Image (cartoon, rainbow, N blue to C red; front, side, top):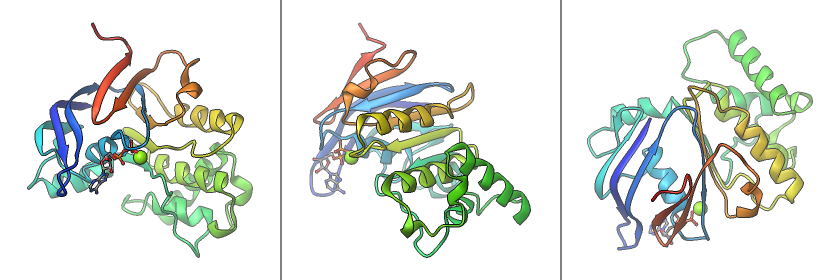
Length: 224
Ligand SMILES: Nc1ncnc2c1ncn2[C@@H]1O[C@H](COP(=O)(O)OP(=O)(O)O)[C@@H](O)[C@H]1O
Ligand SMILES: [Mg+2]
């Protein structure tokens, strides 16, 4: 579902954020991307979301080439992606429920169905009791869960979360990772960046790449 060959990303100021990346992700994969700040994790996610284009190499996500002149296809692709942004991007002045429903705004179904799905998803992230609270009155961790609910409510094929563990303590960070990985299934891949490598050491059946200075190194499965 994701195929990158020789992908580079150079920003207009000359920064080479990604260098010759090869990557293949199939449905059902759980991929962790670790690496220090500035190593290129967010840049890689932006490419996968079609928010940046490779300056060299080829990238296809769900069959859609990520390249200039593909705007219409990339807009369509985004409907199949569930992004959880580092800064959440929730809409202030709206409730948790309304924010989750915004994740489905382009689905062609009735308001009643949307609301039902949103409430169901809020329950799944443990926030049913906050459905009618304004997001500005929620804690950081609760906003995180609203953002996750908004991302997954439309059943995306690829869930992408950028540093979802933030500054959470270990217990809460592990809970968030477990929550995100609970949405992985045979047709859904989950991709998570984190600088907290120690959090994922015990995880089984996951893929792990480590980034450093725009290069990727496969930690698991180890490539020979
Ligand atoms: N829009 C941008 N323009 C220029 N340089 C950028 C931009 N975004 C990120 N960078 C640079 O690209 C490199 C990788 O950044 P980033 O992908 O944000 O890393 P990470 O998410 O691992 O912290 C850094 O050197 C950063 O300063
Ligand atoms: Mg980042």
